[in-house]
Length: 376
Image (cartoon, rainbow, N blue to C red; front, top):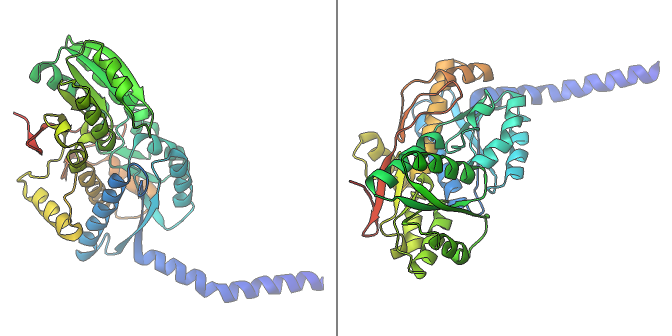
């Protein structure tokens, strides 16, 4: 009996000593609104991840200067997915086990986003991806939302330009072999063939590959008079440099993932004439876009790209949803997010479908004289 009493006394003493610490932690959590960001800060997609972080931090600094959200300052925790689905899933476990995190932005690509999704779904935490465009992502969980639009919309847009504006009738396709790349190639193919065009051959490559000469030679021999590439800017630059060396001078078109100043910096003259769609254009005269671009450039000494603008939109949208919810309760935030209508994003207005996808519009750009310009 003495041992039991001694144990009870010891436990009570622990609570007496630790009580103020628990209370202090709760008060600290109540003083701020804690947002998590998952992004590829290192690895092949680091430019995208760093721009994610910069834009979210810029949005938060603006929000905090205006009084924060619900009268509370916003703080950010950043986790590096490294572009790896397994690392992304580990981050999701970290965020959902932290009771102060109210919602998560990210990650960058569809594969890591879908790897994180079951964890956020089980925990009941909002997962807002700026750039996951796989058609099965947002609909996979009531807690998942995507604001870039899906390949179900972007694929037909690009196919229509390839067929009706550029005049391609026989096109070859090269895509990265991941969830996003497969989805992008499939939706483009379906739309292009629906217009009467012919896909002469489809090939894929694995992440980390750098020699595309053999696969480009195969695609060239298929008789294509155009090339569609579903890749990111770094691979896109390498593909075009090697295509140029082969002397295969056909029109090249690709999705929004190619819209980055780094594509031109890396690809040089080989990407001259390339077409890519986008929902955000840096020289846009819209006052909100101009203010964002100027603020981003002043703070970081670089121009933002399409994906950076989407990350900024994601943070501003999340802040708006929490304000409309009037609470940091997860269910309240999710309901407010789902009810979003005509939110004025830099990369286009945002209204969510029942599945949690944003229906977006695009404009076609072309590289001319080493610059992206709107294609007429």
